Length: 171
Ligand code: SF4
Image (tube, rainbow, N blue to C red; front, side):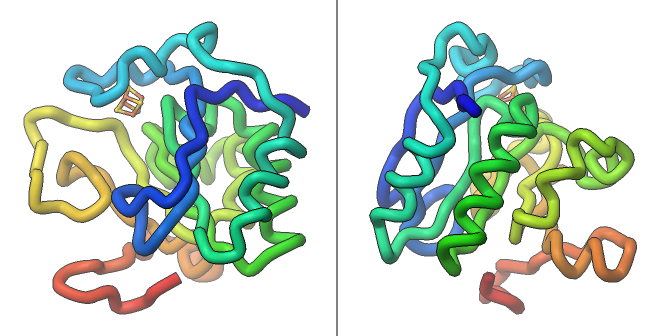
């Protein structure tokens, strides 16, 4: 299966805690005003790579964890699910995923929800310029949340991770 990506960047420190390898998906239908990366909206701006190629690159780094960003990785949920499943089967890396969809919307869609068992933290919701807050860690506007996916699925309600001032739970 193929992914369409804008870039794969190693050792980033802004897309979740610690050193991470971030895969920037091409394609996003949310079109948020003020989006930091509007060229990522069009999937034709990306490059096609196989899930296997990206997985091998990620797994060759024994230290970095993984972030899916974009664009919106959930526009390619089948391929990103395969990648996430591969990472979880072969490593102990944690996976953060950015998306313009809300967690509750994802849970209501069998197609979108297929990725959730492999995601540790979901940074959810569209970027909203009116709610922009430069003091927030790992997100641009205050409507966006850091969802603890495993606990949320276990309890059947949305549970957030609090990173201020220190993380309650580090995943
Ligand atoms: S969801 Fe993210 S990538 Fe998509 S338009 Fe909004 S800010 Fe941009």
